[in-house]
Structures are given as C-alpha cells and as structure tokens.
Length: 88
Image 1 (tube, one colour):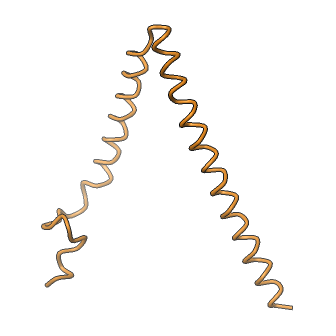
Image 2 (cartoon, rainbow, N blue to C red):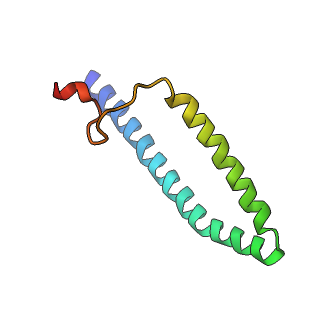
Image 3 (cartoon, rainbow, N blue to C red):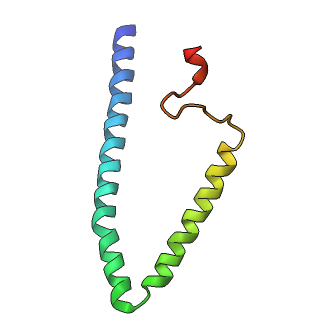
C-alpha cells in the first residue's frame, strides 16, 4: 500500500513539474510574439521613447535591487573559480 502512495505522490509531483514547464513555454512564446507587436504599435503611435524610458526605469530598479542583494558577498579573486578557497 505504501508503494502505491509513493508512486502516486511522485506521479503527481512530476505532473506538476511538466505543467509548469508547459506554462513557462507558452508564456515565453506569447512574449516573443507580443513584445515585437507592442514595439511596432508604439513606433506607429509615436510613443516609443516613453516605452524605452519605462524600460530603462525598470532596469534601473532591478540593477539597484541586484546591487543591494550582492553588496554583502565577498569579492572573488578569479572570475573562473566560484570560490578561490577551493584551490588552496
């Protein structure tokens, strides 16, 4: 009986993973189709620069957020090695 429960749990979890992958692929496909359409529409209406300014603002916010998260980490000596202490 326990084997059937484990199998059911595994099957359910794997099904959720596969559904999430499908949702992610659909979202990426929609973005790749919708984003150029949105840019073309903004170019046609003459509002492209406001869209570009909005994107620069979003990038600035994300950059500050990244900086705040990463400022407490120690600097690496070698860019090829994730942890220089591994080689000592």
